[in-house]
Length: 338
Image (cartoon, rainbow, N blue to C red; front, side, top):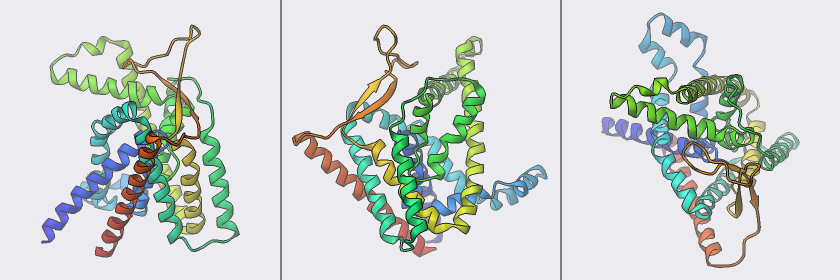
């Protein structure tokens, strides 16, 4: 019975990683929200906090088993495995769905955000002037970010490293979408589309015995960009986790109020009824990425008309809310069995 339960826990950890990975890929959605609602956010932050000097010392001394246990390796490895799988599977499906059923996909996410706000608000009791201040400041910050105009693409490696640090904010800070921040910084396509596709193509070439890509300067540059971006992401993940761990320990109520605020502010990003604005060149033609897709510049939001499409969108919003309620129920069940 115990072994079955352990195996089931492993499967659910991978599924949680799938959920976080998919959410992190979509602009406006935060993987941290998935972690928070599913009930493993604090374990995630505190596990990342263990990646410190002591862990490095264990690793250097060859005490790999002690290192693995110290950083809660089973939890982190299965979670990140799910994220990696998601990156090359679930997120690809989401890309397709957003392209062909944009309104309904955003409606599901909008419902999930509303459900998350309800979940967090109903269990939070420590309201005072400090927590209300944190709430309103974070709402204002979240909303203001959603209406910023994106910058131009920049492949300077120091800037790419900075993008990596910022992009993991969506994993560690619920309601703060790292992928949307990359759009604002102008590097979403470069870092989450072009460089990932370059890695995928390179791995495919290697598996088929084709090494011609090593003579392709564009491919090599994209792989270099991806490597620096990954290094920045790891740096940001460890840094943010230590900071958030300290804040959660000493200012938990204020932190939770701020998280609620960021999630409320993210509603401006995931508002379903919006028109996608694409980048155009001086000749008025669409600018395409390496896959031939039009590059998003921003979104123009509008109030929907009362029609059948809107009715279906509302149904999908309700489905999104139900998904969160199901995650909440699972999270409570998991915490009770521990």
